[in-house]
Image 1 (cartoon, rainbow, N blue to C red):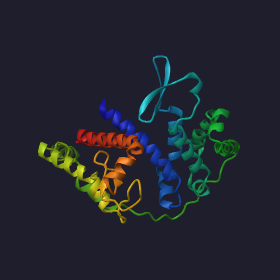
Image 2 (cartoon, rainbow, N blue to C red):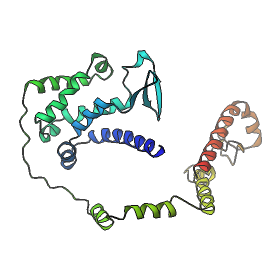
Image 3 (spheres, rainbow, N blue to C red):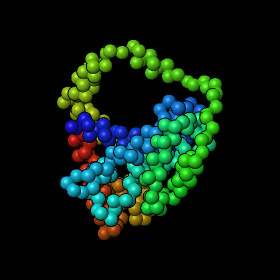
Image 4 (cartoon, rainbow, N blue to C red):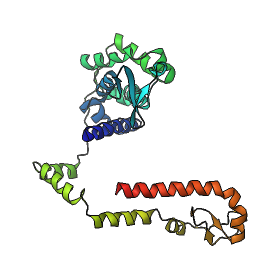
Length: 273
């Protein structure tokens, strides 16, 4: 169950990553893989159709948002989620960019799949993402025309030699490698956990961070060069005890908040270890 939940979360993150990739389609090899090899437009149509981040449970609609399932009120059923937006923007980028259109084969199957999108493009959806109006026009034009087939071009593509070597060298050994990693990497001893906690504590050491600053710290009250800092929050500097006392009434609330945040971070780090 935990493994399935993790895989689901990773898959949703992949949708967001894909959207950012579609913003940068200048690379010919990237376009070729997305449009010709993986047929990403049709994959995205299936995501819109199935919508795995939305479900019907106990008579109510739930949507996966910000890392958890949330019950959606009736008036918000048609509200677009972040994941919906990522998929629609990806489709917009892949179908309307000229260099992508030149590489994509609009055969009968691909065309019929893309035309399914028209059933989802309601006025409510377009009001939330106005750029989809251009996509709607493109699909209307696609429905009555047959775009020219893509030109067959010579494509020189970089081959990931290291990846191919690793896959070839370790073929059939993946279970043994996984068992080794569980034992040697993911099952640290108590001494190793303590060492990791110590290293993390050093990373978040305020003194070390401040030693890297090009300028010396200034007093929080008078602005002079400071040598002492608040012992509780470790975030405010003072030149003398008198300045700290005078400034306490203003600094008290911020000091409490900073101290609480620092303590929480340290607790979370120790729990993760």
